[in-house]
Image 1: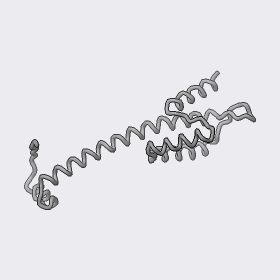
Image 2: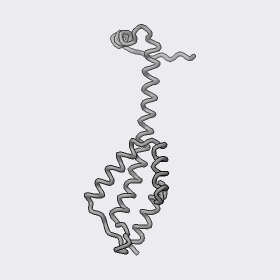
Image 3: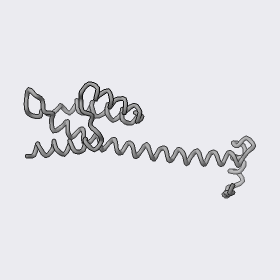
Image 4: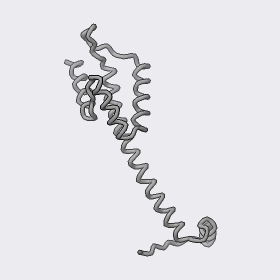
Length: 135
């Protein structure tokens, strides 16, 4: 194993020794490595959150552009309050849902005969909806 050293003041050394419970080397190693692991986990969570926010922005755009119904034949925009509730619910669920749970939801959606919209499909649908509104 390679040795890593760093400089501390006498006061910091005494505090570290008191916190370490006798094994200063193990304490410092475990503390630093735990911090690195935690930082990597926060980074992954931030990336996931950013991706979710992009997807939810596309969904919000689709909802604001309107949803075509069989009776109206034309898209009717949902009220902003309802879009806000839908957006908040989706955002919170996507932040805490594990991939296996998403797979279960996908299967349930397909079992009842509805199409499952994948990540790229959301952006494509938002673009098509916006284009249809303009043209």
